Image (tube, rainbow over all chains, first blue to last red; front, top):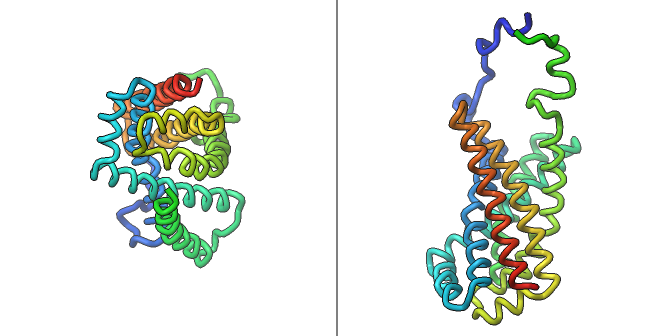
Length: 127
Length: 123
């Protein structure tokens, strides 16, 4: 029976064993940024619903989303959007079998960090 | 005791029990979002903080309305797949299964709410 040893197999070394590296940190940040975007998405849906509902409700929600806290969440969301997009692009490249060498992967990692900040800056200026 | 042979039980499923379905959906939606995200940011972003009439006028433009609708559909579908992986990795047992169901409901609920809003505004 193949199931005899189920649940009692040795585990491969996990997070706690490894020294943090650019690759692991940028990868974890892709996951965090992607899932954290729920907050920004929730606010935008609320804002859309308020716009569809009427002017007085819209003023309330718009005031919230353009408050200092709202601005901070939106700024963070724009960065998360760009960072996650660049991280996704890196995954699409990796999935095709390219860029898996350590130095190329590191370059793409720095590209994600610097690129996401630059794109966020450009977005804020343009909008 | 299962009456299927071990081989039959896993055939075509892969280690995650659904083959490459999840991976392929992620690939397709991520490519779509790479195109949609910049367009969405630069067409809807400028409307944030504008007066109500301006926002309604902006969102009523067919291009902006279509981009927003696509962003809601593809974005929340992609989010649902991603958050499912997150939960599968860190939350196990019944709590994990409940969390996946809850996030699925939230994802499609938010997408539907946003779609209703954009439809009401644009049509």
